Amino acid sequence: MELLKRFAEGDLDAFEELFRQCQGDVYRWIVRIVRDPAAAEDLTVETFWRVHRAHAQFHPDGNFVAWIRRIATNLALDHLRRVRPPLPLLEDVPAKEKPDAVVQQEVRKTILRAFAELPVRLRIVVQLGLIEDESYKEIADSLGISLAAVKLRMFRGVRALRKNLDQQGVRP
Amino acid sequence: MRGDDLKDSAQGEFDKLRKRLREVFPTLRQPELRRDLWPDMLRRLERPQDRVPWFDWALLAFTVAVVIFYPALIPALLYQL
Image (tube, rainbow over the protein chains, first blue to last red):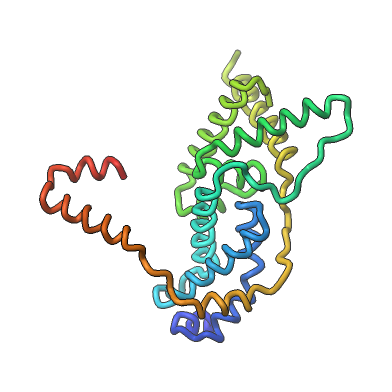
């Protein structure tokens, strides 16, 4: 509490301490959204810069982690909007050595394309919910939307993805 | 098909899609930060604040002028937002 109070008053040492405590968590959260380590590092710094700039607006009784995660999520979303497809992958997954490897690779490319074509606000919900296994509550808090809105976006995202894949002859 | 069957079938499709997506995008359980970002943070703090581009100011002025001189356009403007 004392640390947060000092941070809110603009103390740079307090900010550094918070930075060192939270940089790993913020980075992990962002990299799971943007799936690009270099971009995630830049966005982590940018997130803390915004946090520092807005220190006077932070109330020491407030939830610092939730606040910073919201800022990080918004920055990551802006990044995804700027960097349109092809969606970067953290690590490329090689096709398995099977007779149908070429077909598998094609299917994989189709899924990647369909996923990248989803509107960003739907894509982030599908990505965090289905791939990263985050709870709907966590997603709602980080996006600043209701639980019902998360469920709706998940439904719409899955439906759009399935429709796109169907049109390209890929059955999940 | 009964309601429960429909629900099961929808859940099955959902699970299949989840499995497919995870094959394409490996789950990032605990991606670790490879270095301390504090030096970058200090550089960012020393950099002067980004200035608002002149075009944004011009756009704002135009919007304010439209709102003042053509208030009937406000609903159309809100619709575009």
